[in-house]
Length: 109
Length: 181
Image: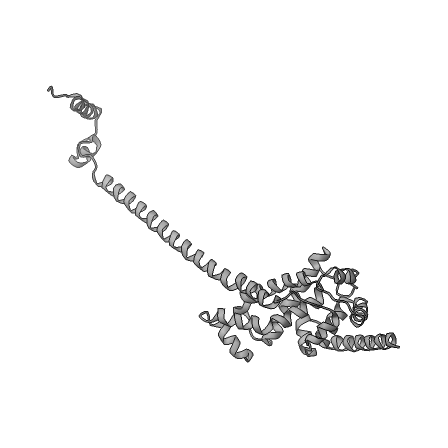
């Protein structure tokens, strides 16, 4: 077959086919290995990000649950619910006055 | 190595790379010369060859074995040549039934072309053929492919291929004989 190409006058650079083979393998096999490595790295990064987001969400929800459980029983509304008392303006004013007094009260050194 | 054995190696992810090395060894020169006759210059052939192997590497898992592996490889190379020629002529679709006006220019611009008397005459005749005629002639005469294979590679009807080849062969013989007188 190569005789035909000689007749056509086609030539190739020296050691062309060996160099070309190396070039082909470099752009296919070696490139794929790089892509696999990059994919492994990105999977690892995704995993770390997923763990971080999950832990953030978990902490957030557990705080929310604590806040929901730790409601203030001194609140006029809640205490009235608990004691079946009627919510009156007078009751709320009393409650707020108590809070102000407690907060403003300072023990002298 | 038989195609079936090579395919088994290629389709196994663990041995795909080794199989691909074998495939490059087996077909590199054949594909190179097939492309070279279509695109003419060595540098362009090198580019098309690279693209062809990248496509083969990416697509080998999808090869459904409806044809021979070599036919599938030649078809990819042929399509890459058509794509290259289309880009070169800035046309969306290369005209298979028209002559390549730049045939001689491309040939002489290539530093890896060594013109002799016979090759010049041969190229002169080839340059007067349409791209379709030239491809069919080259594949049969130089690449020694069967008519059925050429039909599968080019997507051209087998009867058209046969009649085109015999017509071109007759014309070449006649012109070479006349120039020898």
